[in-house]
Length: 174
Image (cartoon, rainbow, N blue to C red; front, side, top):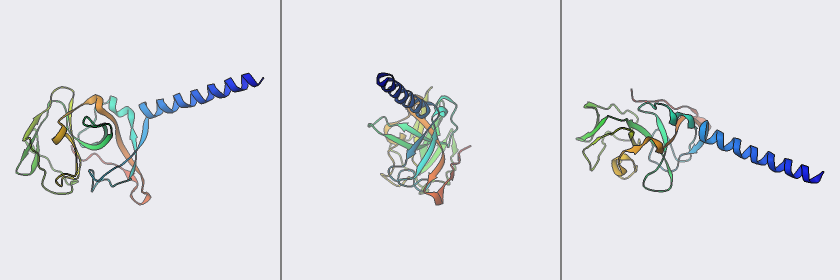
């Protein structure tokens, strides 16, 4: 009798872990903002509900995404600016998307600098930037280049903490 109970307990634990992994990787997860790269939109220690299944869809420009950073072993939270086929240009401190000035009322400053003046995105390439555009505040595609879609892990849709700031996270680029 004891052997059956132990086996049943182990199977229950294994099933629970498998269900949790499935939910986390294919439905939703919770992300915690680490750093100031998304300020003023998001702040240090904000907790976000992120939809994991969105990585399998056409993610719109302006959406805040969680990415597997290409330059280190961490996840970054950034705004999706460019999609495959887009041209991103930096002129006189402004960002241009496909030749048109990008209206970015969510950034920390009106000036966005980049050492590279333009990026032409290939198939399966995406361009992400933090909203904090003060020098040195965001490590993003301006520094590590475009990312492949497989690096996008989820899309942030709702801030749950702090309670005073909870609410839906808007897509701000049309």
